[in-house]
Amino acid sequence: MYRFARRAVPFLAAGVIAVGAGSCVFAAQPVPARDAAAFFASLLCSPTAAMQAADDYINGGEAIPVAQTYDENDYSSGFWTQLPTQSEIVPPQSSAASQAEPEPVPEGMCPLYAAHYDVYAQGCVNSGAGYVRNCTDWSDADVSAEMMQQLPFDIQLNSAEPQVLIMHTHATETYELEDKSWCDPEFTARSTDVSINMVSVGKEMAAVLNAAGINTVQDATLHDYPSYTGSYANSNATVRKWLAEHPSIKVVLDVHRDAIQQEDGTRIKPIAEIEGQQTAQVMLICGCDVDGNIPNCRQNLRFASRWQNAMQALYPGLARPALFDYRYYNQDLTTGSLLIEVGGHAITLDEATKAGVYAAKALAALFRGEV
Image (cartoon, rainbow, N blue to C red; front, side, top):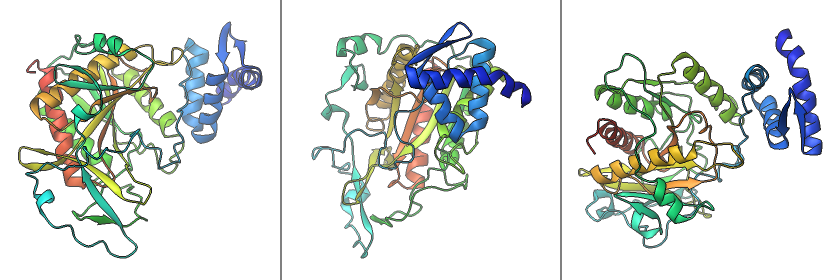
């Protein structure tokens, strides 16, 4: 600890100057204000991860991970940038849920509303069966040029070394545990029980990939517990540790669930019907580079579009368009780093698990060259 503190003092001083004056120079390297601010935010929220990041910077000149642009304490600022349109709020007509009379909503409770997000209704960039919602300054032609290109990595089948890492920045996110048409507005949809939170969904996805001959490991660390703030700094340190110990890892999947809620408290559950089963819809999120924070974003975009294409080709309706937006989410760490949203907080755990399994089957088919 003393060694780090002694060596980090110049960096801390540089950060103070950077925050106040825009940038400074330390160890012959510029320290942008953004990076210094990210370090201080991480230091307050997750000192262990922040110190490791700074130590890496001092030793090897690595960039300090950029702070998230979204308030991690704001539960309403989910990943979805728009609520469904009227044309999208239509469950599959053959769904048993769409035929059943909704049960009355008890006083003080909030309704749950099933919605199917149609890929054709959002003005997306299309290639093959893949759809990408472009929320960046890139032209649609530029996005299209990257879509469906060859994957930027090679997955070795039946390898003794891991090829895929599944982890969870917000591991305590969970789902409705009963299939009903209403919810308790006080239910935060969070739990440290790994049998019902995101760890359980990731476990099923890893099992599918391993059964297909794709060596997959899962990290079950609760990065958002006991503090939700600082989750991404925590998971950044975890991913770096895995990559250092297992450089064979090509793909890092951060498995989440979303929270889609209307102003009146109604919670939206994105659903599809796959093979006769009501299943959650999923969405891939690919971050776009901002001032060099994700230099490999084009490669990640290729991966996202290929996976989204595989899901739509094998299981039409399972995937919403992949979201290409100015997000970070530690996606600079590999050329195969993506965040996947499996349903939302109005979905049941069973619906989410089914969706995770289908998404993993499509990924396995992609890696095996079957789609």
